Length: 88
Image 1: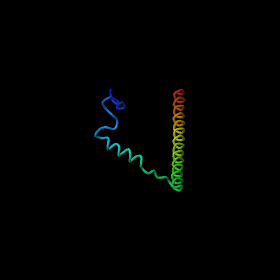
Image 2 (image 1 turned 120 degrees about the vertical axis):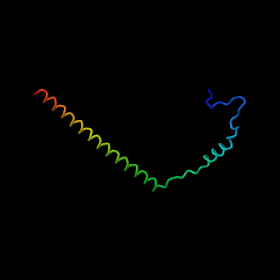
Image 3 (image 1 turned 45 degrees about the vertical axis):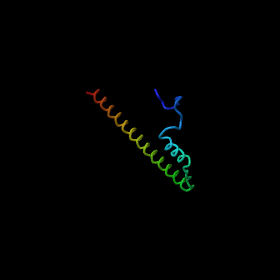
Image 4 (image 1 turned 180 degrees about the vertical axis):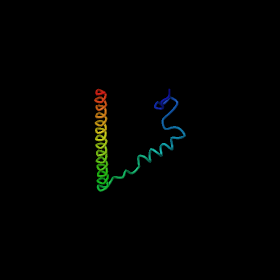
């Protein structure tokens, strides 16, 4: 099984028809400019993330409340059926 991470005795790394293109891509990736965010932009991103977290927490809380109420209603309905079944 060939995994492509071992060099055979008759091969060498960096030799082949596609290697020149790969070298150019590697050089381009290494020389890519990494833009730093300004403090204002960074603060804006953090604020938006915090707002989203708050909205998600409110949504989760609403879901928990809905599930709790639905469970309680189901339990009351089940108890009423049991009480009515014993009376009959």
